[in-house]
Amino acid sequence: MRECPSSAKEVRPLFVGEKVPEGISVTDGEKRVSLEEVTGGNPFIVVFYRGGW
Image (tube, rainbow, N blue to C red; front, side, top):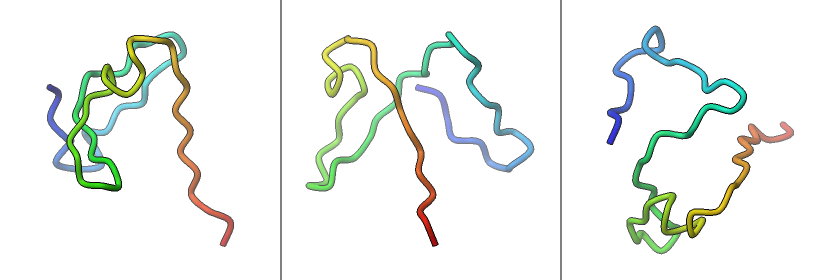
C-alpha cells in the first residue's frame, strides 16, 4: 500500500489511464475496505467534489 505524502510537495496527480494505487478506505460505518472490495474489480470513476460554498 502506498503511503500518504507527508507534504504537499510530494503529492502527484494520476494521469489519464493510470491505475489508482491500492489502498484502504473507511466506510461511514467505520469498516475498513479496499477499492477491490468496493468495485468488485470493475472499472470505476472517482469524483472529488469540494462543495458549492
